[in-house]
Length: 106
Length: 88
Image (tube, rainbow over all chains, first blue to last red):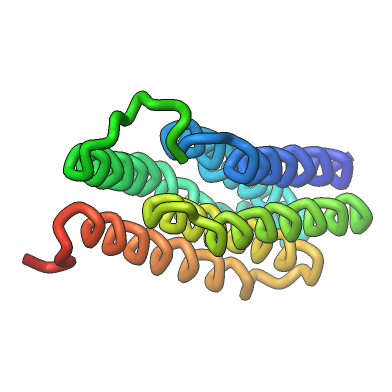
């Protein structure tokens, strides 16, 4: 039972991270490419961490919750990182006279 | 369960390969920083799956260290792109 639960959680998390990286590879402009990796950083890590909590709680037959540390840390840091990065990209586009909404530009 | 973990590790390795391709290809600096960010998050998840396969909690600490150092690295690089300096 726990094996199935851990397998499902880890597979779902890894699949989300994979799809996020696929979007990073495939999409055309930078402002589109910012979106997909957030799937892996939020829900992807969240599901794998949940699977890890279930696995080690069952294995050591006591509540193992130190994975919540990574979950809290990722929740706080992901928005900060991406907001700074997009602000930097906007600033660079403006200072070079590019139009950020131009879909033909890389 | 071991098979599921192996499949997850293969998926994460492919995800890291995509991020490395975007890191090398660019085309602009912000794309490379974004790819580096994705790369370390995938490495963090991979560390957790390795920890579950071996049944040791040691890999959790490695994942935590990757997360913290990766955050600082990405913020420093984004700050550099924004201002041309990291510490003003």
